Length: 122
View 1 (spheres, rainbow, N blue to C red):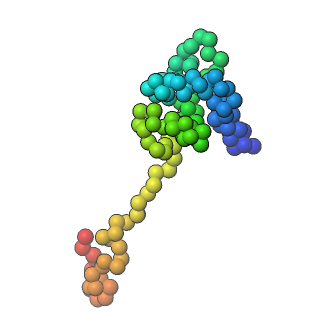
View 2 (cartoon, rainbow, N blue to C red):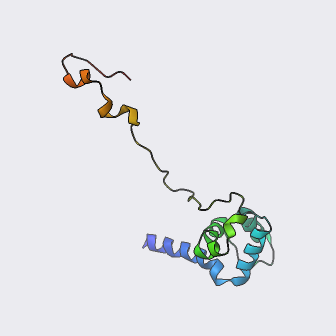
View 3 (cartoon, rainbow, N blue to C red):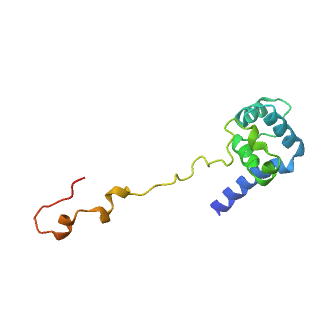
């Protein structure tokens, strides 16, 4: 139930730009004017007549959604990436052991095990 409520809260914040066309127009206009999503979110918090508050992550999610991609909003961002990496996502890991340390590269002397305490040289 906790996971479901967290999901619904995230989904509502994502849909905020879909539900309020005036807010969406304001965000798009500011993006095209060269503002960053953090600047837009901060400005919306400070405006006295603002009816909606918005997080910068919500703006990024909208920009990289299908609707934002169709309007080519990503080119107005400061970083100008085609896709955005999530903030706390797992980082891709390479091989645990580098290829030069693979067992297939061991010397034949080690495979014989004739000498006690014989070890590989790196």
